[in-house]
Length: 351
Ligand code: SF4
Image (cartoon, rainbow, N blue to C red):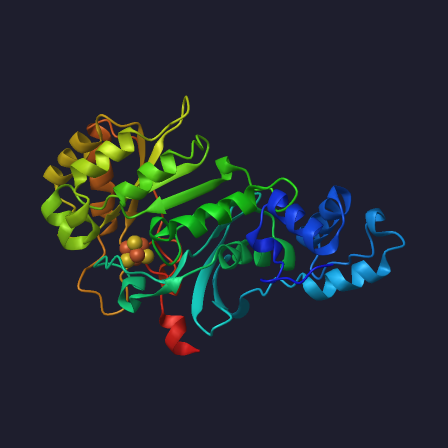
């Protein structure tokens, strides 16, 4: 066995990467590596003496139990609204992040964070008020899924990167996290069950497209009918205006019958006029999209108001008339500040 430079943490490694290090550090081959990786992702805490591959290797099993420490974020708060639940997780350096557990009919969707805070500065967003504290490591991103699926035993089927942070601003770690959570021998979450939501980093969209993952879902927060309103709401638009964003979306490798997801947070007297619906429809015309219309959930001390229920229905009808494929999303989570763009550092100051 050799000296290790960094701890062997399967949360940051695909099976292939893990097996390489396992061979170098423990001098054991593929079968033991596969058994260790599987056991790690199946049980918490893992019992490395259980797999057949470790029969008569009790010393190795003991060593793995001591070495393979996931260093999970600590679950310190759980805030419920009906069945929906927001988790406050403390990272190793004390920073807090949030995940949201969203029960669906037969499974659970987990909304995860990619950064502690965010530097994108969207005017309607609670997280923006924190600024960016730091990027999460791949292990910290996967750790949120591991906590839900393995530690808590939840039937997690879908993962959405819609928590704290702009995923494409932490590109390498997010991509590595997707690789790890996708690994069949570990969490085995297929690309088609993963949605990455971006505020519109056109450069990141192109880089992601170049990976050639046609089943991964891409969602974009549009939230405005034109550059003037979008730049006021989302500073990212000053660097990547709507035309550049649409060019990047056009180049996304959609599979047959696939659609891009576009999110539109409807804010009273800001982006809710009939001409706005027409402009949005015009903008989206060349793309294959499904638009999720989301009534704005006011963040604390928000300068904006939520739309009325009638206003939401009317805006949806205007879009439908323009032949936009729209789905109205309920404001699930409004009361616990876990709606879109509202995962935040409230927990940070509360803990
Ligand atoms: S909406 Fe998303 S990208 Fe914008 S500031 Fe909030 S977390 Fe960042």
